[in-house]
Image (spheres, rainbow, N blue to C red):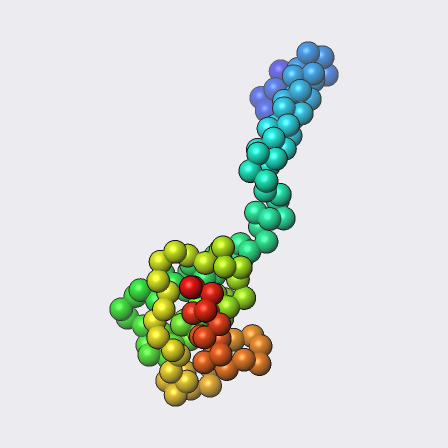
Amino acid sequence: MRGGSFWTASLDFSHHPAMKLVAILGVIALIGIFFTAGTWTGMSLRDATAGAPNRNEFRVHLNNLQRKDLTPQLREYLKSRIYYLASIMPKKDLPKENFDYGPVDEVVLAGASGIKDASTPKEVYDRAMEKRK
């Protein structure tokens, strides 16, 4: 270890040409493995991440809705978000389990909205339930 810490000395490939070759071949092998896995599954990185934010948010809200200590307004808000996300997500991304908690009570919701378009909670609920079929 000439003039450096263990880590910088161990990563110095200048004295070991064979190590450079091994590192380059390792990177090429990893790229090949990822490319092959993507080809076999027919999945691209774009496909793998496209619906992820909505799916993740959907799951979080669905899990939170199971809690017993929610205020009525928060419960209706979570239902509103779940139905909205279900209405815009591809059908294949929707969970197999039931996520029908009944229509959103707009009186309890008291003006709060989990919907990001001009639709009413009833329209969003109907679209979400239609996708479930």
